[in-house]
Image 1 (cartoon, rainbow, N blue to C red):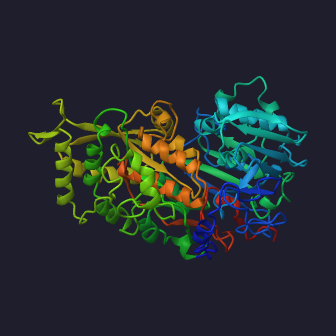
Image 2 (image 1 turned 60 degrees about the vertical axis):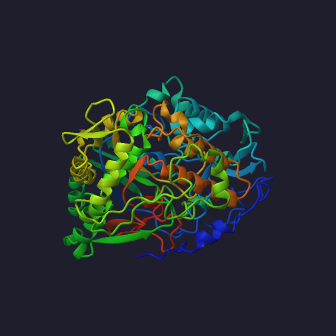
Length: 607
């Protein structure tokens, strides 16, 4: 196991940042920007602390994904795109440090200047910044990219753009965004938007593009070859403009990244065992212990790496659509959670090794605390006391079973909750208040074998309540279409959360997502308390205030019983070719988005 350099450091970093909005060097151009205090790295830093600036260039990695793709544009709603393309083929003005929540460093931009009150932010481009065709990255490209993404792009970009009052060039290489109202996080959000080449899209419909347009990138990788739904290969651009930018030193070391696509997770695992792909992430602890002892592992050709982290668990489980029907009633949702025998499933599928996600931000300093709400958390929630779902203020804990299949105590509780909601058992069938049998459909994406195993166990438990369910297994395109339009009763849901939650929380849980298609609010949450807690996060005057707001939000979401939580892993399990390696010092986020291949390298490269 590699040394986890950030362990114990993160708590001190977060707790030590209790600084008012006016704190920090936001009044003049700087090499980086932090929400609280100053960036940890000085202007002359050599590389990110978790990157190896001496890593050799060369080698290749072959990854596997279940599903397919029919588009190369990750910035629009239409189509299926290899998920890593969004991060590997596009550069942004600033880059996130995964060792410092709320901290960015210059990438396309050489400097950033922000108003201390959060009214505007100004970036200055590096004169050497180039696209992969050799043309310079201009202010015009940036302004066009932001407006296009914010108006016809994916919903992830739309919310922040509505908060921009003006975007304008203020110099040959400088541009400024002025906001509708003070919001310090927007200075960071604006720095992380992908920058596209305007000229590539002139006369073309950006929102309808698919495989017809090979992106001109601003990043270290360019698309080399692909076959729709089967593979995509990226190659490192030898003329990449930013090789000597401190943020990039020691990153993007591999010459080739090939993504192979499979129809089933089992087939992908066999491909790894056979050497067709050179790395795989294992999410099942029992399988990691029991099935990774094949010849390539025994010989040392392949190795197993465990990557610890300190990031929030996020919410993982089965989302219930509250827009109409049975799940609009919190008591029905609570009954579904009681009937879900987590302990049995965890023992059956994971050998009981994984902890349960007890809230949206568990495993982190941002997670709600046990027991009644206290202090500033209680004060924030007090105005909504009359409408909060039971357990929000008093304290809410997930039901625990004895691990037996019968799960009698929780089934009895589920029956009482259904009765309170007006449901009755008639001739062994759970019957709605209107006299119709209660049944619902669980939507599943093709190839999700572990999810189907959970559903099989859950279906037997629901039979004890007189509820019969059906499963709709669809391909990835249909799955995205149906979840984008919220056309499901219940479905598997996974939402990763960071140590720096902010404006994106509106996209996840905001009331606009009840009707607006394509948001992350699959559950249809429409709660004034949620909106208020997000507002409190974004207007916090100190890190203490911010943490209290997040913990309050965590309480409202968790006690809302919108998702049936399952397990999460406080570590990532990656099996890979022994030639592939990564730095000894790991960031607080551990296996962050892009960790592989961002800071990995080939040991044989250059030999």
